[in-house]
Image (cartoon, rainbow, N blue to C red; front, side):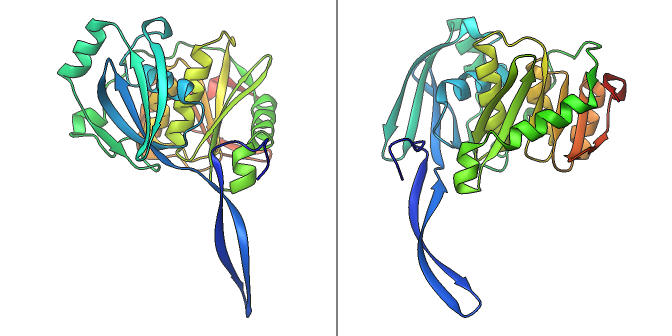
Length: 266
């Protein structure tokens, strides 16, 4: 490791076996830690995530979970390391905090699923508070270019090979956030996007397209989500009902458009 390496990368010893050969090596591994999201002094959720871009993550989570309605209702206090992980302290208006307490759900989620801690089917399949309006149209070539740019903008994954990335393509470039969990990466992206005006755009991701990702994209007002891997039936159904254009298997110069295809131009 060097002084310029991201702090979320660590060296771990491993034994590589290839055929009859055995070799001891130092491997670069991405950090995964318990992140406690604390609102007004009370822990609302504990997520397994990469402890980087925690302001973006905590704001994006707050927005996509409906804990706050806009970034101005949210105030970051500090992120503190503990032996068991990291606690992120935030403050929200009392009315928002009271609503959170009334619907209290403690989420202890793995890095594979943002809904594992839901206490009921109703909590998992929570309704959307907004729908995507018609437009804008997006050239397919622009989507392919954004995916190529995303592949080249993943410093954590390039070093460790174990990280998802979410990108927001806009006229000025591509905003990227990484995490071991695909839903965490999107939360970080939503938070980063909410803290600055990047203008209209769309999202690209290095994962499959799940219900949770579609829900987060729609909640953030993102009109199009393109992923490199497969969609689920729940993701397609939610995208269709919400007005989001869902693209999957987007690789090279090929992609499948599952919903609202009129938004994608050749």
